[in-house]
Figure 1: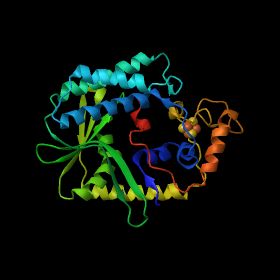
Figure 2: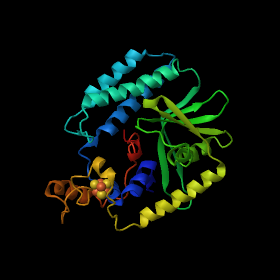
Figure 3: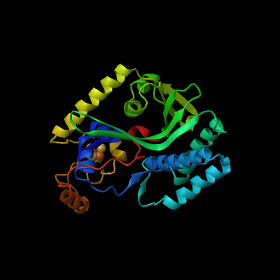
Length: 294
Ligand code: SF4
């Protein structure tokens, strides 16, 4: 079976090959997740539900949306498994943060009739005919705008809005466009980001030539990954949010250890046994990338 790549898998390798090795080759189970990732996941889930109701002609009230968020939070939050990295922040801060994201989105888009939803959390993919690998993603919302353009919408819970220049070079949504244009080859497309906490929307477009160049660049990156043998650590500020921080001897700001810490060894051993298994599984749909840190 050919390997499946995603934007988050590619970014993981670019950010730190060692983390990629832990996660996708050794498949070391992540025992914790960052609270930023947790909030992002709950917000995405609530927005998906909101739009599913809208598709049935039902628009839930803002109170119901916020109630659903709180309920989901209470159902899923495990204090031992969710890490708060930023000093001085409380769980309640993050609950408020998630609510603010939802409130802003709701107020800006109510009554949600400005466009037509074509897909929610939709899995899309393309296959490289030469090498056989696939690239896939899950689009938060695929939309037909009133002018007929297909839009690829993505919700962001990050604390910053990137510059337009960065968005014009962004890989994630462009990668989705490569996959979607196979289905809609003649329809113009737009890439749309919702920076929820700011109530801000950003838009970008790609030419066919840019998409072809991106596809080639992804092919080069996949080749690099598949020929990689060393998977060296690349310590950075992201180590604070890395789920393997406790296991990784190279984590930034940590005294150097000659071997993997004892606490991590059972999980490593289990993972090493599994690493004989053929290829990594697809990345979870809503796993937020490091760029999405709150
Ligand atoms: S702790 Fe840092 S260096 Fe180690 S795997 Fe994670 S990101 Fe890489």
